[in-house]
Structure formats: C-alpha cells, structure tokens
Length: 530
Image (tube, rainbow, N blue to C red; front, side):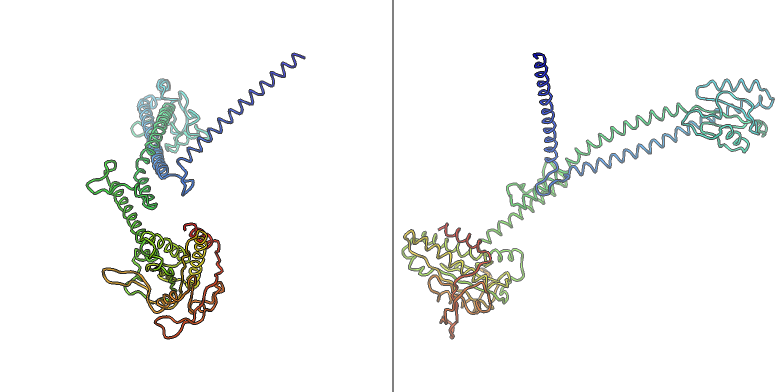
C-alpha cells in the first residue's frame, strides 16, 4: 500500500513538472510572437494608413531584387561562356592528339604492320586523358583498338543506340558525326586515305573543373547577393531619410505645428548633413510650411474681425467680394439690448465691456449654428446676415430660428439673474428679408464687407419697434417662407421711421427645431457662462 502511494505521488509530481514545462514553453512562444508582432507593428504600422510596407523597405527590396537578378544573370552568362571555353579546349586537345596519332600511323598502315599499329595504340591508351584509341579502314572495318572506343565513357557522355555503328557510319560517309568525346583524323599518304584514327578522350577532368568552378561561382554569387541585400537596405535607409524628413515637414505644416518646422535656410547656408539637392528641397518645403502656417495665422486673425465665410473668400481671392458687390436676396437680423444707455450709466467701463462681450458672444454663437454671418457690432447691437456671402435657400427660416434662439437664451439668463436678485437684461430682435446689395464697401484706405438697402434698413427699424423680449419679423420673412416649423402671431401694423406706409409684422412664439438637442445644448452652455 505504501509503495503504491509513493508511485502515485511520483506520477503526480512528474505530471506537474510536465505541465509546468509545457506552460513555460507556451509562455515563451507567446512572448516570442509578441516580440515579432511588436517588431512588425513598429516598422509596418501607421495610424493613418494601417499596415503597409515603409518606403525604405520598398526601396531596399527593389534595389536588392535588381542586384540579385543582375548577379544571377551575370553568373549564368559566365557559366555558359566558361562551359563553352572548356569544350573548345577539350575539342582542341582531342583533335591535336588524334592528328598526332594519324601522322605517326602513316607508315605502319600503308605497310600493313599490325604490330607497330597496336604498339602505338597501346602506348597512347595508357595516358590518363585518353579512354581508348582505334584504327578503322575507310569501309568502317575495325583493324586495331586499345582501350574503350565507341562505348560510353560515363553516364554524362553523349548517348547513341550503337556507338560502334555510329563511328563506322561516320567513317564510311566521311562525316565527323561521332559520339561526344570522340575525335577522328584520316591516315593520309600522297592524298590517299589508308585508314582513320579515332581517339576517345576522357572528359571527366574537364567536368570536375567545371563543377568546382560552378560551385565557387555559386558561393561567390551568394556572397555578392547577401552583401548587396545588406548594402541595399543600408543605402535605402540613408536615401529615404530626406523623404521621411519631407514627410515630417509636410505633416507639421498640415497640422500647424510651427515649432516642428526647421528654420528657413538660404542657398548659401544649406544643411551640413545633406549638402546637395536634398538640402534645397528641404529648405523649399520648410519655407512652404512656414508660409502655410503664416497664412493660417492670418486667416485665424482675420476670422476674429470678419465672418469666417468672408475671410475664406477674401483669402481665396473670390471675385464675388469685389468693390460694390452684387444684388442678392437674403435676410437680415438686428438685435440690441433694451435700455443699454441707462444701464451703462451705473456701471464702470470695465463692467460695461464685460457685459457687452457676454451678450455679443451669445449673438455670435446663435448665428453660427444657423449659418449666419455677423456683419458688424454696433455698440450694444449686432447685425447678422443670412444668405450672404454664402447663398442659402432657407435663409428666412435660419433667420427666424436664430431670432427665437436669442430670445430663449435671454429668457433663461433673466431667470437666472432674477434668482440671484439681479436686474433683468432684455433683448429685442427685428428680422427682414429682400433684395440687398452685398459686397465690399468703403474707401481705398478702409473697407468692409456688408449688405445695404431698404430691406436692411427695415430690419433695423423693426428691431427698434420690438418690445423687450420680442422678436418681430416682417411679412416678407414669415408669409413668403411658408415655413410650418415657425409658430408666430400677427402683431398688426407697425409704423416705422422712413416708411410712409405701415408694415405688417409677426411676433415669433416658437420654432419647431429639427435639431432641438443642439439648441438645448447651446442654451445650457450660454446660460452657464453667465
């Protein structure tokens, strides 16, 4: 029982060790996979483009491929030329031996001295470079032989169905169509061919030389390819550095990171690191980056003094914004603070400025979400244009929605002020639409974009006629739009300054906003700022 218990404990320990070893191997494999993934992510991942091959890697692969293909092609052509050279040398050696043999056999052949013929054949066949020699009559009959002639010297030699028949046929037809490694010369005396000498040359030394040379050349090609690949990647990284530098400059210019742009360089003060054409290109890109950022700074500054749409068209050289402008159909909204003069008398200039900034910010924020352009601030009043300089077919609805938003914000702020025991600050709004002149007006020293005309004047008069907390719109705004989203009541006829006839106006009660959540968020933000 004790022995069985010990065996069980031992088996359990072995199982635990095996499990721990397996877990360690899995952790090692997982860590190795993570390292490989981290390496690939480091070089082949970009937040904008995802997985991709970097430019340096592509360039290195291209250069490596060209270098390897060039080395392989050169090696192949070299081996072909070397093989042909060895074959020519082998042919020259075989032809020289067989011609010497044919010259030495003239006398024995024509005197029919078989013994002398056999002795010379045996002496030549002892050479290591010769497999065998033979002498044939012109009819193709064999008269003497020593060694292997007409048989395959090795498995790599040229194969024929019957080598002896091939040699006999070649002799009878007097054609040098012999098996590979066989050479033939006539034994000639006084123009008569008494016999034909055939020598079978041993080509194995030539094959061994070719194999050794091919092996050495293959090793050399592999070394050249490895050196070329390493050199290509090193060279590609060096060559791609200016490209990555240009990319960094372009990104910095696009994102407005002026501090990351290199300082401008003159032609005589080029970078010491790249004192070549790359230095000129980098300098040009850096200068373009600074110019782009300068334009952005000017654009931001300009947008603080004029509407963003006007600023964009001025910077783009839009022909619409020419002196005098054009006639457009648009809507104009005027809004001001009721009894501003009386309130400002009891306030310090700093308090007046802070109050104006808060309410003018309200006007601007409401205008922005309804695609309006703040034309100008006139003391405590603001003039907002809808439908110019950017055309908007729903300019009437946008103007009424903006007027309603301003009215709602003012009501919420007054509720907050009343809870704190502060006096209410009421606003009044007037809206009108019609034909007006929109464009650049002023002198050669001072110009501004604005809209002028009778429709603009009427909007200002409606603002003056509105009661505290009211938003009055003319009949041309309400009835001509036929907007079911707007709930307004007829406020009757109103006499306005400069008009002989009374004007029928409407008082905005509510606007059914398609994006009510946006207006609610705007009101909450503006009220929380007060």
